[in-house]
Image (cartoon, rainbow, N blue to C red; front, side, top):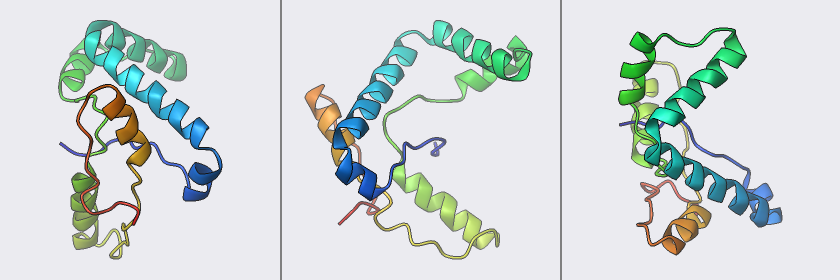
Length: 128
């Protein structure tokens, strides 16, 4: 597993617009839940969006195995960000990044807790 997508806002935006951030996160959590409950419909919808953007859909022989290889989750998989950064440093693509404070999972964890779901971890990369 590794992180593919994170929802990112600046700390200033979070401080000034917590209601907007909460709404976006609630929408993301609800969407992820729907995707996991309706994988065939979600796959078809994603392929239709790709068709609208590129002019043609992905063939089933490409889309089906690709879809099976991903896991839609609310967890940002913070540890994998650290791991990927390490690989990038080792290969010379990046200098050692300072990832400390890159995550503030408080708003997401409040939403997950309200749904009776477990909180997600920041792997030591959270806001102090």
